[in-house]
Image (cartoon, rainbow, N blue to C red; front, side):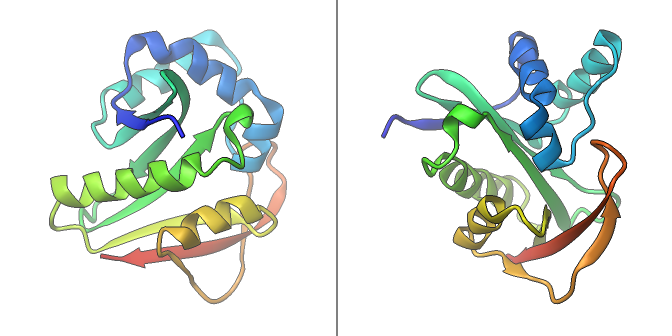
Amino acid sequence: MPDIKLRHFRTDDYQVYVDLLNNQVIAERSGMKNHLSSFESWMAFRSLIENNHHWVIEYDGQMAGFILFFSEEDVHNFEVGYVLGQSFWNQGIMTQALKIALHNMTVENPSIKKFTAGTWHDNLASQVVLQKNDFTRVPGEFNVVSAFDNSPKTEYHLEKLV
């Protein structure tokens, strides 16, 4: 298997980022909104460059996807989200990339106590990625609205204590 590397976003990642978000299957499965204009896309992308908790997944020398960590006010808890291009699915890439990213985050931020993630109830691949990275499901189902199309969705929440 070629090496999986994580790095921070660069401006030359913009087109791959836009292509990933404009892929209807990926956007729907991740619940991400398609950007309506190139300005909106660029502004969202700029925020990725400026945050050192967002990582590009490089696989075999190309950008395969990304992993994003978010923390509101509580610097001890981070929510994780991720996107992987369809041609990279079912190869163990995201499982390994997330393992590396979680390690990097805990080394760089030793005060982290918990990681959380949400996934659609029918997104089994994402659930497996999280479970292989020692996340456990929080009891219950949560009703949310998808940013992709404003439709009601059922989401599972998972967490990993550090």
